[in-house]
Length: 299
Image (cartoon, rainbow, N blue to C red; front, side):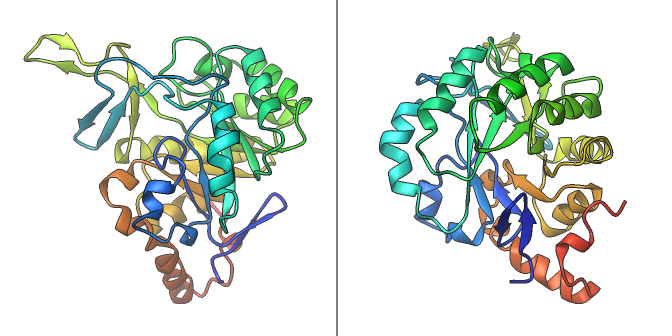
């Protein structure tokens, strides 16, 4: 397959990974699509204990994307390991387990309880803007990002990818700290912190006041931050933020990403997303590109 890429010591059939929080565990999509056309799936973010998520409105559409305040609703790591993982473990694609937490200990205990699951990559989520404790708090300063990355590195031998927030001043500094702490790869960006007001009710839309903005509106920001991160670290990067077609995938590869995650676009046009690998092959033939790795970081 022409679109295959090497990521760490893994081979992805193409650089398209479903982003955490937008694809569940893939089971609902598998009823309608051949999800093994994707390179991988980053599963719904897990926490040590089950979470019901945030109260109130959770999703709000914007002119160029959507806002969400789901609050990491998930069944918890034990339910995933015992019930869900056995159902999905044999898929022919790369499996990424996304893990969030409220304290360092909840992260580490969650990792320990998942250790017997033979997934491919641990995505350490230190970037969720929609939980009041932990989450993004670990990813907004270099010292705390390095500290939690190092602690996780000492807890697991899994391939470790750290997911970063755009809500920081110097993304390169945060990424370098994660690399120093032992990260094998970086993924970015999570949603951009934003706000909405309902003028009819004259109230803030979200109970949590602020929510995460995703979709096309944040793509230029994500592209800039992937480029800055690629200049700062020498470990692989997975880019994400408003990607919905092959041309946008190529932009992120040229900026320095080795693969991409797609999220919000699955809500609007999943048919299009499953066509991207074919469109990438067509572009490669037209441009005379033998391997997508030729264009990674060329700008």
